[in-house]
Length: 222
Length: 405
Image (cartoon, rainbow over all chains, first blue to last red):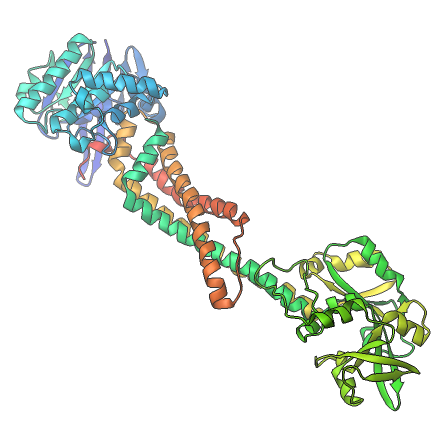
């Protein structure tokens, strides 16, 4: 089992009172699955994804990764966890605008490996793999939305993560490009045995999941 | 791509922000350097001007008072001329010049005059005001004088210079303006004192001091005339004001324990007060610039952090720690500090070189040691200003890149 979530709750304090975005949720995610999380807006799916990636600290509950409990309340431990085990693909691509495609990947590689020459080589390989061999020196604004998302996927794979988290990765793309991106994610899942967890609104995208879960008001309903 | 390279690329990417940040610190440092450059030179110029007023330290016999010295009574105490040698051989720093004197009130006919024996070279060098009157031309170069700006060579009649400095013969004398008027004497006239005839080499310009009532003759001739042997009434010393404030008087007292050493208080205190005032002005400006500069840089880095919330969120998301976010921002402040310090030094120096002669009539030369000071102050300003924004940047959540603008 790659991930075990036990009694996870995330409470936000609002003027109208406390709201549980994730409510006492327990879930097991086996290694190598392509998990899709669906649900209405405010159902807690992005909150769950953030907690899974160590981006957000839960109010209560525990996260066991590869049999080892992650300290969800230590900022440094979470940063190390993210750099070693998790890759992220966001709806908004999350690329640094003044870095080229290669440099955007190199900055992720630099977290673990300080060898600039090796990092550059690896970044170019990754760009070739996502079909952007001729866009290595392009800045994000010089790339189309689909190309930017592919750079983001290449960056997510930079440090060979076991877990790839995608938050609405096709949300800003047209159907043709969406399919391209979903195909790449599927390939990553199947060829590299990387566990993919994807949050999506799209029923078509949800179909890619080998394990499909649905949330409502922070509770697992399916 | 390292974090250092990322920082440099980000600086270059936001050029307009970089320029405004650099401008704030460059102007601040420029003001400090400009003021300091001018104040250092003007301090020295003031010191030279005050030194030009004459000696500022008086060495008298233990039993004598300053009044005795000026009254020049016949029985005023004296001490050995060999004391001059003691001072010369001690090579004390800050003793720019000295003039041993024997002074006695004598009668010429029914008139009282003050006969003063001097060693001409040293006497004249310690009385540069005479030089401006056209008597002699050896340049005054006090140890606290500036190399440029305040010091200007006078146009001196070389004939007078030779006569006065090198050959104040046993029968030559200078007359104070009042004495010359009293005896209706001019240059090349004759004056008989106690049976000895003196040639009048020069009538000194009016100074408004006791010197106007003096007749100056060679010290050794005066000693012989008065029968005092190798005795003198006083040694006038022109000491550098900063050396005086650093304890020159007590050092002199150690060398000459059985003498009375005093300063001509007004001159010395004016010099020291001027230096203090200049330093205080520089310090006040330094504090203001430190304060305003830090706020400006803080504001700049703060705005930069807010603009970069998403970028910082991305870096945190891909696994960078808080300390690495601090590193990026502090490095940025450091770069701005170094560049701003260098530019501020250049700007301030150029402004001082241009404005110094224009407004206060002194020539200013670059002070190279201020370059290091400028960079150090600039870095301090930048780092102080960026500490709080960097701390706040560390608090940016790693999922900030997902939030809408």
